[in-house]
Image 1 (cartoon, one colour):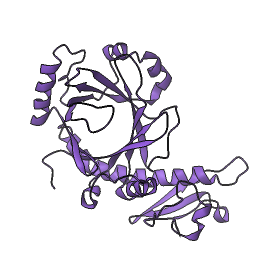
Image 2: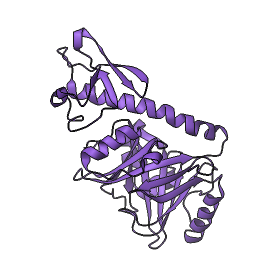
Image 3: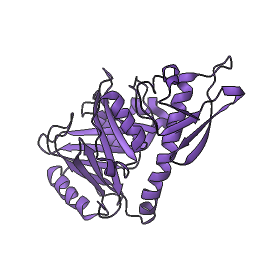
Length: 299
């Protein structure tokens, strides 16, 4: 097994340079004709197919990136389902708290929970002529937040529905062409961000991947949200959501000089993280941690 902190570091992918990822050990594909990567993480062993170039040599960058993604994503997905799976089985939907810079900046809940009903009352009062059915499903998720990052500038209510955007949303935000371009990458999940001061409503389209350039992002399973205003313009700030572990996320923040969003104890309870980046400049802006639960928080 090799460790990413060993001297061979300079020969590895740029994903690993400068890192102290001593928590991950691996034996790379390509050695002695081996076609798979063998990795060990937190007591779990993984065998992941190597990625090779047409001439049969190992594609170092693609192989190492895929290795990190599969180990981080597989481990975190298993951990996450152990938490949220029983909640879904109770048909209650999730609650979550969103952390940025060590502070809770937003609290979300499905309509199953009383706090979401309070958010709903505020929303209906501020936006009585809705073009969507705010309480159409007990799994609709609402949250309240202030201006903790751009493009959110005022106290607001977020509302998410776990379906593809309906016709009214497609027409209002002029996204028919974008939906066609994304095709099967569009996920059954969209959101509306209601500014309680200006009464503007932003829309977030959730997709498996985006076609434009992305910065280096944490290892794991990733998906994205693109934000539209009511004129159909796309905001350059894009949300990348990552299912990964605290180890991989902390390493990412260290390498990029970003503030880790939660303390060490809380980090072990987080399996979904967020990184906001500017699609025009690839600058990294906000790092988020999502604590997902189904009843009263345990901390």
